[in-house]
Structure formats: C-alpha cells, structure tokens
Image (tube, rainbow, N blue to C red; front, side):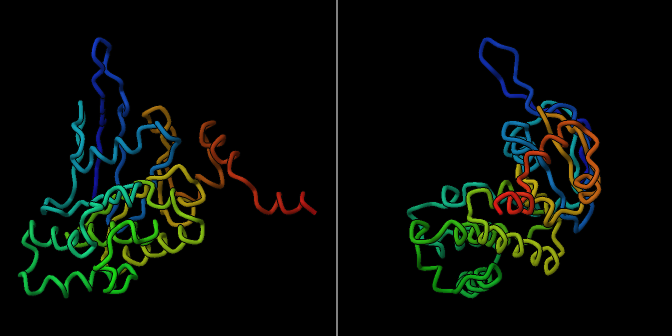
Length: 248
C-alpha cells in the first residue's frame, strides 16, 4: 500500500543550515495493516506523517501509494478539538467536506452525516452541537468521521489518543480497529506511547532523531528489542504488576 525510499525532510532556518527532521527513512506498509511509528516528541514522526499527506514538502527521496484516488489518504490530528472549526456545528463541518468534494447530492447529505456519526459511535443529534460542547473523545470521533467521509484507503492517525483518559483511549483504539476491518483500511498509528502501539499494531518502526533505529513485527520488537534506544523506551514504561507488588 505504501513504499517510502530514503526520505529526507528539512526545515529551513534563516542564517543557519536547514534542520533535518527526517533523515534517510525507508519502510513499507502492507494493505490493511495496522502500522506503528514510535518515538519520543521531536523524533520526526509527525513531520513524516504530514509529508505523507502532502502537508509538508520533502527534500529528497520518494514515497509511493498503491492508490492515487483523490482523498484516499486522510489524517486524524492529535489536537481533535483544535482541528475543528469552533464556529461551525459538527453537522456543518461534515457537510462542508461532502459539499466541497461533491461526494453526494445536497438532499442526501443529512443522511450521509448521520451515517458517518453512527459509524464512529455517535448519535445523529451530535450534528447540532459545537466542538466546545463535546468531550475530547467525542471530538476525536468527529475527526475520524470527517476523514471517513472521503472514503480513504489509508488513515494516518497522529497521536490520536494522547490527550484522552485511559478508558477513552481504549474505546477510540477499538473504534479504529473495527473501522480497519469494516472498511479494509490501512492505518498508520503515530504514538510515543508504547502501550498504545503494543495493543493494536502489527508491525512498527522506532524513530530517534529523525532516523529509524529499529523495525519489525510489533510483538517481536516488544519481547526482544535490539536497539538500545528501543530498550530504553521499553524500560521507561511503568510495570503495573510490579508496582502493585511493591505497594503491598
């Protein structure tokens, strides 16, 4: 579904050499795969995601998608509330996508909006609400619904649950997993949270300072990490069982 070859992304800096945020990155993603991109803040993973959605220019290298249909690659942003227009109702925000991209006739839009909301587990009445009237988890579901309106084949989710409570995180991750099956989606999940990636991803890459330091099947990477950076990330994950034992 996706093949990336030696991708380099730089940010210009006046009076200084450009900052290289992504350095010679290569990997591939299979169709219908739940693929993780892991690393600390500032490692280049969000920059990589934005470049794949053509929101940032690349310096060199290439990336190719198996699909070239307009709208077939969509992104769900980390700040779900901030990604929605505070002056538009949820219905108006979804209707805008349908109208601009001519996805369905005007008379069919209310039904289509209700269907999209239902698909992400929200009632049709949410269409009348403004973003400020909804929770962070609900806004994230709206962002997913907006992306689904384009009938994508690839969904890039940039830290989709980092600002949510743990219980809400689980529901959003379960939603993404269900949508993957129902829509045959390929999902790229970007996260600094190893527990989140471990829960859903088939394969992953680990990034540090703009480079891939480890890659492979998720279960194997977590059970036997090879790179010292991956080992340090895993060592920093709290062990709930051990903490409970100490508390006794």
